[in-house]
Length: 84
Image 1 (cartoon, rainbow, N blue to C red):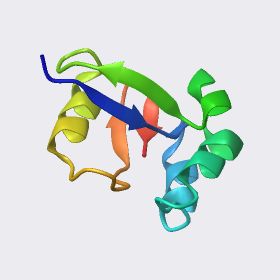
Image 2: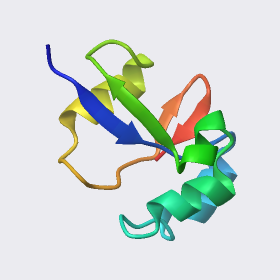
Image 3: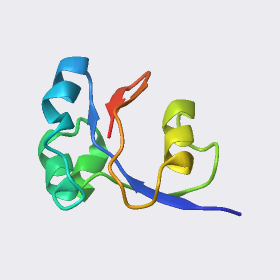
Image 4: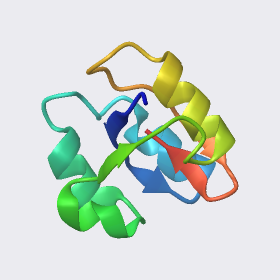
């Protein structure tokens, strides 16, 4: 079975998302997640662990499986907010 591992930063509003968009890089992602993410995963630098296709919210799941590896992408809007 295919597995992915991802990190994310979750913010609740489009305004917060826009404020972070140009500040997030691959190099600073872990620290940005710790400082800005509204998800419990922020304590782990946004690390979500390993998961298979269909185990995340559909919009996030699609983005994870289609985005190039080791890139920052987003925002991806879901019912929870905006994800990078």
